[in-house]
Length: 77
Image (cartoon, rainbow, N blue to C red):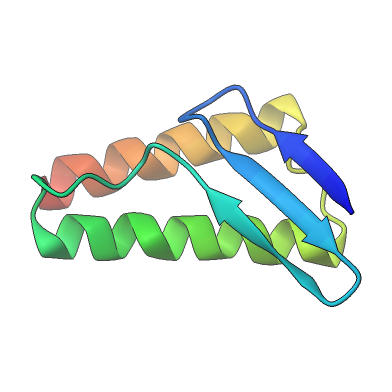
């Protein structure tokens, strides 16, 4: 098993032979359901990219995560 800690939103990815899991501070109960659903989709995409071997720790990828979360928050928050 491999663990990846990203420096934004307390994202932690656990990679295993048959997939993985992701946790973060992105979703909160007090946020609108549609915002949490969009943030869940971002988490799923990050996990899928990590499983596929994309370097989710690169500065450009981390900037992309922050941009995506900002855009979703501005449009749905």
